[in-house]
Amino acid sequence: MTSDFLTTLLANAWSILLVALFFGGSIFVHELGHFLAARWRGAKVERFSIGFGPAIFSWHGRDGVEYRLAWFPLGGYVLLPQLADLGPIEGQSEVDVEKLPPVSYSTKMIVFVAGACFNVLFAFALASIIWVIGQPESSETASTSIGYVSQKIELPSGVKVTSPAMEAGLRVGDVIKAIDGRPVEKFFDIYVQIGLGSGMSPDGRRQAVFTLQREGKIFDVIVHPQLAGEESERRVGIAPGYQLSVFQVAPGSIAAKAGFHPDDLILSLDGQPVMSFQTWQDLLELSAKRPVVVRVQRAGTEVALTLPARAPAKSVTAFGLALTTGYTLIHPTPFAQIRDQVLMSYRTIWSLINPHSDIGLSKLSGPVGIVRIFHSAAEAGIRPVLMFTILLNISLAIFNLLPLPVLDGGQMMFATIGRLRGRALSVNFIMAANGVFILLLLTMVVYISVFDVRRMNRDRAESATPASAPATNPAPAKP
Image 1 (tube, rainbow, N blue to C red):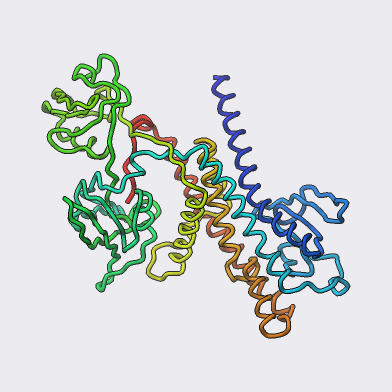
Image 2: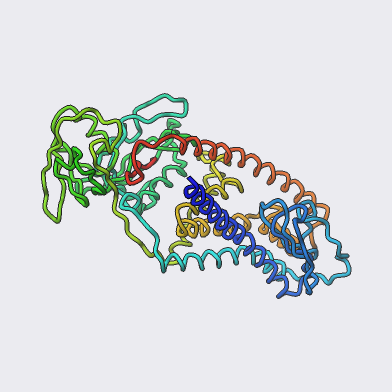
């Protein structure tokens, strides 16, 4: 008991350390960009703060800058009295700005954009590490073929209806080449294209155009997604097609007596091709009361094995067989990783403002959700932490460059408008605009955090429920 407690404590401490290092590091890198650019351009730097609000502790450096760690870890800031007045969130400046020399337009643009540039550079450095050490990818996530088509799909109301995939005639073995004209390279792309889709048919139903390859022919099929699942996302009721292999055979079990060996590749069950774990599960249930032939590939040779009649299994490993998927390490270049995250961020922002999309603020993650994801990633290993940090930094860079007051992009917009009109915008106008958007931003953070907490509580409830199968058995994908 003591050993288990100590192991759990050390694991949690490690996860907390990684969260502080990479989440806090992402904020620090952004503000460091502003800080270094301001120093380089000769602008007055009054304060460098990680977090908002009162200081936990602070000190003044020899350079005259106050360095601070504050209580509210929602971000950070560099107090630049010559460039922007954000007193409501950064605190009032104690410097008489009128006695400071004015800064040029180019200095303002360089300083404001530097934070985003440093986030991109940080993401590129982490992506270079992933490029070297590799990124794990299972045959399930790498697939673009359909391995399972659900008969029914459950709506948020609890009502079960015929799945959109079944209605559209999608089949096991179909290869998805594109959705709504956008090519897909792995099943995650398919999930994203469906979830972030905004297509609507003339009769008002949600719509997605699947470009399929079937028996050598390529053609389009119109599918009408339904909102389903805990998050009310667009789904169609398919899972990826992939190769299942035998991970473990329990000695003396039904599977062992039938002749299964570790590393056998499952080909078919009862004459039906098996291209997903869900298909395997369903076919086992249907054939429980009679003998059934399972064809496997072993050392390049096809072998037929017979499972005897058996009682309906209470779990997928009841007859002593555990399955898994293959994993490989891929080495995507840093440029490819950055490109993918930029496209993902762009599509998410577009879905948020598209009136036909089903993506709203409740689907986003705020500080609570980000820490939760970081913690989950830390429990899985350093690679997931690096990969999520890359996404976070690209998202921070793009978000901060949006032309909205308070954000870096908003300050660049104010500076540009002043430049075009020949005189700076009124200080009172800028302060009023910033004040309104500060209130809206804080309201948005609170709103998103409510849903983050709900998701966190739901995950805890699910993790407290005993699993019916070991982790080696892959779960079917959501779409």
